[in-house]
Image 1 (cartoon, rainbow, N blue to C red):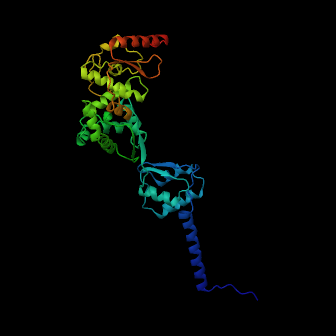
Image 2 (image 1 turned 90 degrees about the vertical axis):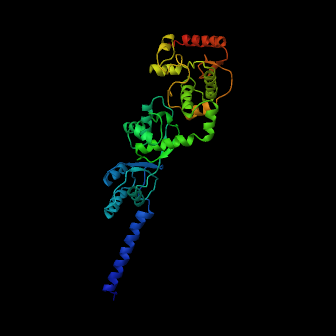
Length: 348
């Protein structure tokens, strides 16, 4: 005769406890041990959460990148078990095979991944504001306001009316949610860290302040030289002119004064523009940089070569390099060759 199944209360309770334990282990496996949040790519992806976002918004941004539909409802279940936790604004770098629980925990705690803020030399401040805003949550208008906020700049000891020309183009790590005012403070700290005592001594040895180094570096970089290895040579030429009291006669400063950066040739008529930035008309350095100089240009000035050159003209082969001369007669001959090359190419 078959044995009847045990239906005693103790047996039923034991079976129920075992079932609960098994369900708990299964859920734990899904949430903690099983990578239930899988991206369609085998590379890490970024999730950007804006202020006051809801979990549904976060999920919607992830849904298209999930390969496991189970992830969506498990995420929702975790949210339901944590009604007091809201998503925190930030940028989160999510690796493939991240567990749903781990993702939820990071976004709920605001454990952001720093973003790499890389910016390069730019001619105009507004171009720099735009470039900076591409890597953080703030827009370019907010960045511009902070960078030109006189009260803020005075608070952190910046003597200039704008932060633009104190920026050292490089790569920095910041949080995506950084406030523009905090970004200003961060970049000013980087500026001061860049100007070590060694660099200050180099500038002093050239008879320049750090700001004047930036002014000269901006001119050096705006010269029609695409070769950074020529920067120290060009810087040495301008330093020679400064020491001798000869006008710099730098064509890029005329373009800046005219606000016509597309000029291919500087003609006699252009040289009459009355501006302190016209270095044909006024001796010495202009009152400020004519672009936000690159790190290479600044280092090029600090490492300026010592020589006797006073004149230069672009090489007629349009290689990006210059022909240098010590005398005006030698320079006139080389300049004539360059003008001939321009004429042959129909460049006006």
